[in-house]
Length: 380
Image (tube, rainbow, N blue to C red; front, side, top):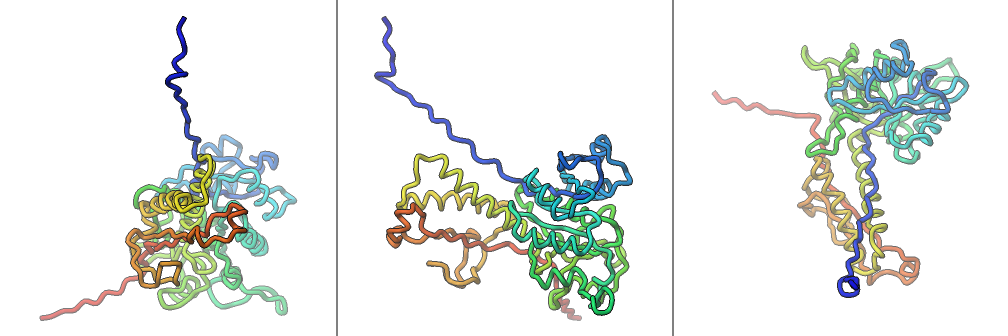
């Protein structure tokens, strides 16, 4: 009789649980009225405009026009979500329905939305979950100067100025005579956002295939975009500089924050959340001890390293306020530091509630250069 070896050698195989898939933050959704997609299906993902034609879209549809601009971006975006707005449905209701149906897309591009629709969508985007950005195109010339629109007694500021006054950080507005021009901008952003080494980017001065430059004066561009010394109304325009450069200015959101900062901070937050959750679900427990807290800090460090690799975080001097042991003027050699309050200082109530001590993530962004001043000194 052969006896089993497990009484002598007992091997247990523990297969590590899979980490949650990371959201790419590289898919936009165009929202339009065409009936090629039913409200029951609501959202479809496409990798080309030819696939849209096969599904029943026509070249006359606004969705097709916007998708053509999106996929023409030089960065080569690979996926686009297309959502449908019902005939009697508001843009806001349709956007919410698209979000409930599909959580993959990040940027909402409403087609042919009125200012009232944009205002509603902008308010929604500020608190939408998962994180969402709004990108829209306007051809209203009142956005180019400090004028008001509407009849006497019912006048209102133009949409750029109205969204700026509300400090909306998740709305990106573009003035253009090209229909749905902002789709080209988001096509570049979604295609460029690969997360690979040195893939961090800024939208300033990018070329937009398929979009015509607008013949604007320097005064109009300054009013919309501002410059290094003057604040504008935080819109964006596509203009020709000199004879050779067709460029987007300036790549900012309604509150003046740059698009790339909002995008990367959303991504960093998502990476930290999932990294910590992966840790909590993969271990028998995380003890409320310094080694236990350090294990959480370690996965946050790993998350931050991904953004050092992409070029969003870089070494620099911390110019913020004091955070535990981090003081103003301290050099962050790694570009970030993760600190936690001592376990010994925890209240008994927090220990009983099984809360970790507060953890602080301090990062230094690499920033970007948009303006250059050069002095040429000549000696004969």
